[in-house]
Length: 352
Image 1 (tube, rainbow, N blue to C red):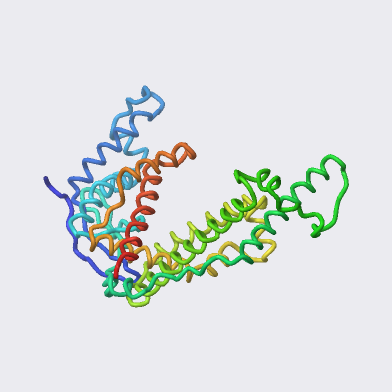
Image 2 (tube, rainbow, N blue to C red):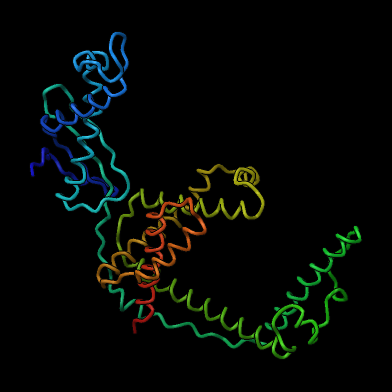
């Protein structure tokens, strides 16, 4: 199959970008020129002609040859671009920046394409680094920690009771005091959950606190492993990946603010900052997140780690049920990346 294009320049640019310059033969442009004229002709209406029956020469005269060639050049580039990327074996991220550098009737079309690519990444001895981070020792839950949790539960219960009384009696009470707190007895614990008695209630509190400590310990170790690998990995993180992380962080934060019953605009006024100020404050964190993602992707490639296809399918279905307006492809990509990250981190945790 004829490729219709030639590259005259392939140049590496800063920030993990590649510049591609070349030409597309007029033969391909001419094919799309005919398509554009046909499409325009379907709806063209001019005095003296029936709709869709305007002669080509009159249509070209009215629309302008350069306008038609401009539309044809976009179609030609859409066909050629994937072939250029495939031929150059580029792993492109984001959308390309395309410029038409030469366009004239009966002549090849000149183009310039700037693309961001996944940067070259040389991993350190990640297995050794991961194996060198010892699991966190989880300290036993103390009686005081159990008592503190129970006190918080009693306070929350007292607050709920206060609100009920306020609704019915239409009066306001002050702060919660010790005498407002319910007594911890069998009757109380049965009221607040599936507990048989006070002893069973305390056991469940202790169990939950132990799990929390284990989760925190695991998360701390995971962070140390990733920080250790990241420290020894040299890579220029493309701006487009940093911007993508910033957009995700911003969307999550806006959602959190909305859930708290405020608007993002109100928040910005309160802290006296613009959206750009917020993004600037978060750039360092976003850069670290993007770098970690590059590292995880590279390790998955090296170790041939893949997410569980069935888990990905089920989780994507859940998202689509909860958010039917979401794009199924984007939802699947998001879930797939999430499970891939988890699989890679678990692999690192298991290194001795």
